[in-house]
Amino acid sequence: MLNYENLIQADDIYNCVALAEGHPVYRIEGFGDDQGHVDALVVKLESGTLGQVRFASANMQVVDANARSKALTATEVAALQAWCGPGGLGDARALPVAFALRRDLGKPGTWIKMEVKRLVTLNDAVDKRLAGDKADIRLIAAGLRAPRGLETLGRIIAVDLFNGISDRFVYNPTQPNKDVGDQYPGLAGGRLHHLGNVGNVFVEIGPNGVASPVGLDNFDPWSSFKDPNTAVNHQWPGLLLADTAQRKRTFAGRVIDDLERLLGPRSRKVKLASTTRLGKRRKDRLLEGMEDGAARLRLAVRNYVNNNPGNLPAGITSRLDRLGW
Image 1: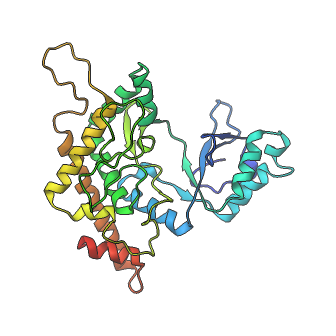
Image 2 (image 1 turned 60 degrees about the vertical axis):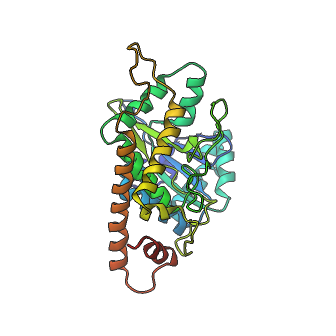
Image 3 (image 1 turned 45 degrees about the vertical axis):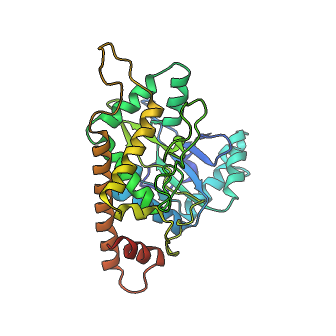
């Protein structure tokens, strides 16, 4: 049976579905049961070493357990190769996806597995809004406005800053107020402040239909700070975590501005009613989440240091030094 806690075995895989054309990410599906339930996992190739990928993922899981992922073992990679290779079930059924998976398995990097989630991306929601469909926008806005919604996003941002990724929110400590975000097609008002990849802002739809931010896609292969063995420098985005309260509040406000622009104004029947979507305390709540995320990271990193005395990676020691942790 395909299960996050179990090792993937070729005999457990019935089908494979490519989830993003041109990207090495797949949903592998099992055989199901008599009630029609199909067990499944998502596997994805990250363009980084095992240590780099684990570093980013472990940090995100400190603040968001729903973003958990696990690197595939050599045995599990071999199982995928057996399924789609000559004589395997995928190859025997002549599925085009088997050829694509076999090709991707030959690329360098680190394969990870994740649980299957029902996701809505901000990018897709904005595209639909601009085309006249606001259903997903309302879903995302409600999830952010709900208790712990903006706070969770703030924690995710804190980890992104600590990891030094620029594949979701972008921050340059040497030019903190420069607009470095995406130039979103179809959106008036010029470049976004700090939201650099709108497609990497996700909400997960729970069994109750309520959306909640989730810190998936937390590894950035293009980041200068992805390697825990490399010291960070004065351009490391994580410096914001130890900056002045005003600097952090300004950043939080600019992120909220980005989100409100993308979500668009609410249509209100009551004259003079607020047309913003994220509530009156939206900036404070996002900032509270960032502060809480930083505090959780500090505790986790200090525990790591205490449990691993001796020759620590430069990426850890330099982060601690620069943050005063």
